[in-house]
Amino acid sequence: MQRLNARYQRTGTLWEGRYKASLVQTDHYLLACQRYIELNPVRAGMVAAPGEYAYSSYGHHALGKEDPLLTSHANYLELHADLAARLQAYRALFSDTLSEALLTRLRENTNACTVIGNDRFKEQIATMLGRAVPTGKRGRPKTLA
Image (cartoon, rainbow, N blue to C red):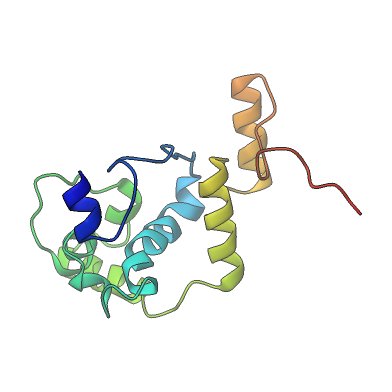
């Protein structure tokens, strides 16, 4: 582990950090979440385009590369019945950048492991769980000076 950390200028264990998962309202936010994830290496300056990152599902969803590890979500399949048109429709999603507001919202919800969706969706989840769902950052509220 020390050799790996020295080579990649990192510290700690390989899987350090808490696992994060958020419940996503598929019909409104799933494809936005996929864009957010697949553009992370681009935003980090690791690659110039999402298809250049070897560990991305972009090659499968936008370029049609076979990947036995992936199962396409129904929302992706609904982009178009024809495979070539579906691939084009997925690539077209990346012609627009994510708005700064949506980017911030996705980051905050992901980091806080909260529900990603509209208010109605959050109410439905709260009803199913029988309790309120977290809507903001976890932890103690900041004190006002």
